[in-house]
Amino acid sequence: MHPYMNLIRLLLPCLLWAWLPLRGGAQALPAYHQLETGGYTRTFIVHLPAGYTGQSPLPVVFMFHGSSGNGEKFFWISGWKEKADAEGFIAVFPDGLSYCIEEDGRRKQTTKWNDGKLETYVCPGQALPDDVQFVRDMVRYLDSAFVIDRRRVFASGFSNGAQFVFRLAIEASDVIAAVAGVGGDLTLSDPVAPRPIPVFQVGGAADPGILERRGGLPMPSSPEALRTDSLFGPIMDRWVAVLGLGDTYDTQSGDWHYAVGFEAGGGPYIFALVKGLEHRYPNGGNNPAGYVAADRFWRFFSRHPMP
Image (cartoon, rainbow, N blue to C red):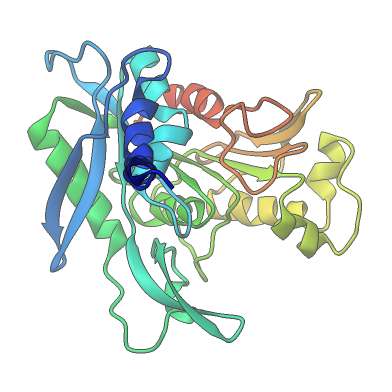
């Protein structure tokens, strides 16, 4: 082998990494910030929209990654930085902490959010930092470092990150105006919402976890069937009770999704099932429906500032 080939092989990944952010024109690189909370140094990416001047208060959207992920991964793939530039808000991509996890009799190290059941599967003897307090501290940090609209602070998440934002809907409704999650559910044992807030929940009809829980049963074929489904119905029932909603609901049907929405009473709740969506955060290019969570969720968020 030519002596320079080994050098090229070593440098090529670095060259590709440097090139990737520039595809289709110059793009902003991740801007990392950190703060001390609960005895830990926590990190997060803050993406300011193009043309940010600091003259007017802007909304904030947090994007919480899933297990084994990090903020930078979702900075690139979630669609939220592009949506922030298009709509004029600040997008934040925090990093979860790494834990020893016990699954199927084996131990592994992975990042997680403390969604309310983390203590049930971490290896013994590990401290569980307060991620809800981390969110509160990030909001305070953003409020001091930038010009934000405290009535329009929202949170979205994927998988374990979705489970965490649903926890925020219960335990941080004084700082978070609305939440939306994909591929996760509320895991708190006895949730009581001091202030019911708007919740948007999305499931994938091709998600292996959902398919396993269904045990071979076919997927609902209409939004009405979705509402009474043996798996999805109880998920909706729980949120209806937690948010203080009545059982009156509206439905929406499209070529690629069914949705059920509850409005009366407390904070509105929407459950949507997206056909063909696997266990992914939908960004338009990773599902046959072309479903873009950032687009759908931003429309939902923009209608629901904090009172």
